[in-house]
Image (cartoon, rainbow, N blue to C red; front, side):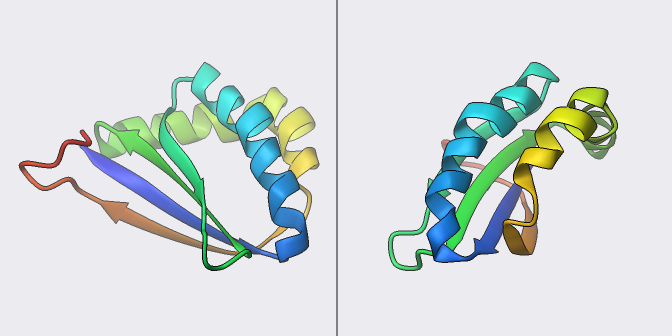
Length: 104
């Protein structure tokens, strides 16, 4: 099992709208396709940063879910166009929980 921790950087004036879009459109869509979204956050100190995290049981599951989500007509025709060019920079970290982590 591993997590994908994603950091998105954007113009601070667009973050509130982006966070709302993630909460109401992007995350529900991905969850409906089988993704496990652990959480989403906005940075308290840097108004240009948004974070979210997904969990995968294996690399094979991640590949399958990426295809299921990102190649779907719903993503390509409905969700992705709403995102536009809001995100300027994306950093993705693959992290593994320590043996006693409460997040699994």
